[in-house]
Image (cartoon, rainbow, N blue to C red; front, side, top):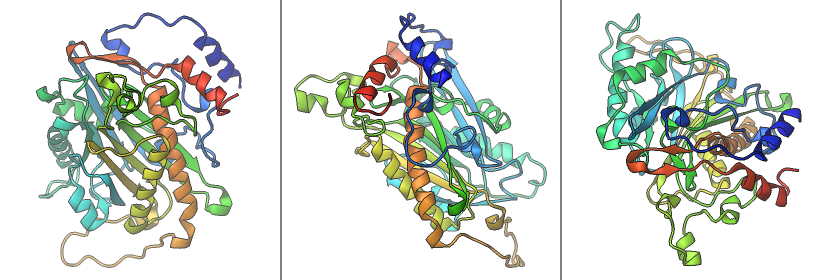
Length: 397
């Protein structure tokens, strides 16, 4: 409560002049998360970090790429565990809410139901460089000397409004830095990594994360979500119509006959990548079911998955009971698998809906104002006026 009072007091102070330097696009420790403001989405309790890293073993690394006046992009890497993901594979599934995107590696994950690499997020025209760099990095790892095939999984959103995307600025060293710097613990959010140049609901978007721990009666499992938000819609925070109240939402021009600003993402264009981790022992079939529920959490934030919005969800389980080896050669022996039954999945579905909703809101709250290509600016979500709306609708006191 004391932290909340401090943040509320800070919000009453005059805002400093916006800087257009590179430092203005990094994560700002003074920008709050949802829970710092008293926004408590859902019924389940977050993990210690309220992040995807609350799932034991999951690591996140990020590289923020800022160059001159026009490059505003980056890389976010999610590793399922500290070992070699190719040799010690985790079951995985992908759900496509809207397929307007470039998700490298999707067909093999769907066919085999497993991950053999970390997951990378970056900008649209950088996915192929990122995939190549990650493949090269993995092939250099011990025990990979005879490997002749690898399936990098790389997702993207289009940050071309703030970033000179046509220059394809992500390089191999950016990818390697994200991979080797991946750690557990708190995750930087907002205008960092793959979220450096993204926008959401007409404001600055970015990286966001959240988690839920189920009560012991429901298995005690942890679900963590990380998002790269870059889409339009009508922003709703825990049921409060923030976008409408602040006059920033898709189709505003059609409804009010007020010409929309370019950054309003009028038709809902953009994209979101959602990555889900859990320690519940789920098969790839039930992971696909889990992934599909994330779209419900996304919808609760005000997204309608517009025509130009690529909405992808990747889910994986870290549970030892469902891990898989490489299965190479013709003599691979069967191994026992102890997976959660269908009847035990409902709590996980609720947890992923809550975590997805909160992760999106965190991506907005933590994002800083960014100026990039051609002088275009994405303003951070205004905290004081947002709080006024949330108080009026009883979301916070």
